Length: 113
Image 1 (cartoon, helix red, strand yellow):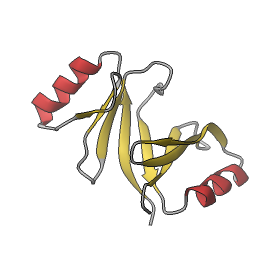
Image 2: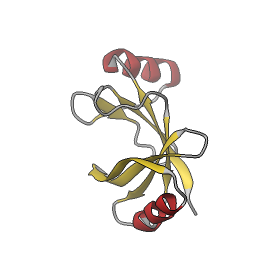
Image 3: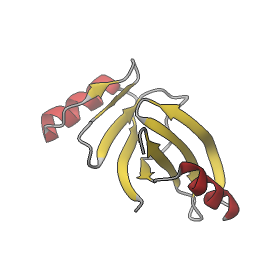
């Protein structure tokens, strides 16, 4: 069953944002390059995206799915606009799209599923 498993937050200051989530909420963040850090709990994780070329304008909910290509086809068939085609990242693959309400979301398939 598909479920939200990740929330990616845009940030202008990765160091300050990471320090905030670690000190206030006790979250342990892992760096993935100079502009990205995230929790790796395996539940609903939080990512911090500081690359202005990659970040969204608002928080990005990410939904874990079992068959990324099937969901991509269903999203496309629904008429929703794809904002970022399927791409790989450490841990899996995903794509981003706009739902009918104009919200940007992502569907992701973790490696090994």
